[in-house]
Length: 338
Ligand code: SF4
Ligand code: SF4
Image (cartoon, rainbow, N blue to C red):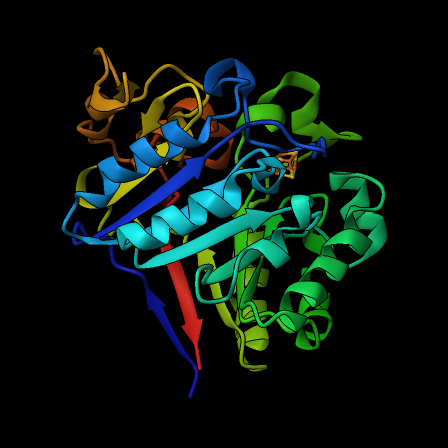
């Protein structure tokens, strides 16, 4: 039986999104990495291990996701994975664009890495490579096959925008034989490169997806994908005015860690010096005010405060100026499982 559930926010489970470098071999047009805000350095292994120890002290169950940039460009990623496993993190994921540098698949084991999570932004080579760069489609698909052959569980992330939403209907057939266990759809956010002037538009087309388009396509296709046994997750995005709104910054326990030491609790704040925590001398300490914590407290009829500040185009109002719906926290997800 297929079940859809909203993944409730909880403070009893901690998610650490650890960007160990921002360097990448690709230049995806919607990349959210912003080296001016996140640093251009590659964290040395002793710093990575010290920061991991900070999070390991937490008594919650802990999920760790290694990211970049492209994290497999870091030569010490296998050592970082082993260190994290020994510290007792409950799950470890490596996010990758599929290039799998430094022969990473031979240097870690399925016992140490719970998932390799790949990124693809089109069901065809043409669409994906237009967004992520020439050759990236074939390399990603080959990477998934290689990871599966080595016994790793794999997942795939698809960032939905106006440039690739026309291929979402092709995904159930396309994904059936890829061997992935989990499929994540994201919605394009105006962050990093996609927030920069001309990049928010592609040939007169706004990158953002309309509410009607999202609701018509995404839940329906997600169910079809789940029918082939793949667990599917996608963001809720739109809430009715009567729905309960919660800000993950207040009711969940997420850390988005960057190589310049900034630690955010909200991904939509990452283009700004709004981080609430910072690593100083390898100690995690509160950052100066005003920061994201102050924004989390604000209650507005439109739901997410940061959404209203940075991407108000996805809101609409009636003739009396009242919002027609709310925007959910970007971290609120629907999950479909068999
Ligand atoms: S989205 Fe990922 S793969 Fe693409 S440029 Fe950014 S870090 Fe690299
Ligand atoms: S996306 Fe909005 S609701 Fe979610 S943590 Fe950030 S400010 Fe809060």
